[in-house]
Length: 221
Image 1 (spheres, rainbow, N blue to C red):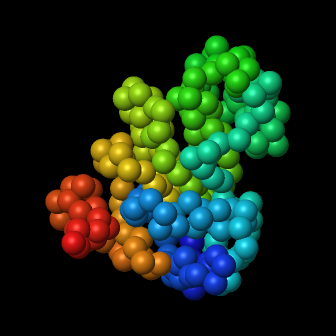
Image 2 (cartoon, one colour):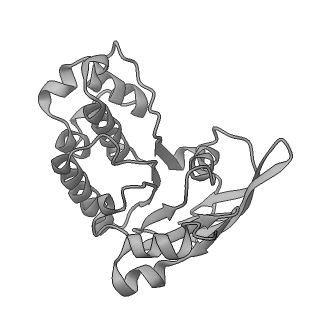
């Protein structure tokens, strides 16, 4: 579904990363990495918000519209309602009524101006837009920030429903490793500008914190 080949990003002559990886249909991939390693920059490259070298192919073609991203610093129009923002983001006058969006949104949120919503409610508006989009690959950067336990559980169940259909894949980051629940089917560790596939180590014990300590955390003196 997704093939990234030698995706390279530098800043002022310093290499940030040089990455090659693939992602199959119906996968939920967790991207582990410490702050500053380039996880958000990778997402911005995939969304064409940053220039980069290398190639990104979705289903064998280069398609910008194949991605939808929810970044950790979301931008919406505060004076618009949640419904208006979702309609704008998806260019669809009925987008807020689509089942994936309606499932995550309380009716009162749809009518409320985004500027009056809490941090968690604003995050749910963006997650609702992502799940209602037609994107093949959905990116979640620190998706759990601001969400209470009930919202996290509702979100995970909505994602499971889409994964069962096998029509799209997800890549997610986050430092609250318990927030992913049982969603991950693939785990990549990002360190020193490269990726290591640690899926096998994760699936052996289903302990994300153990994998993080073994492959990501810098424990050297």
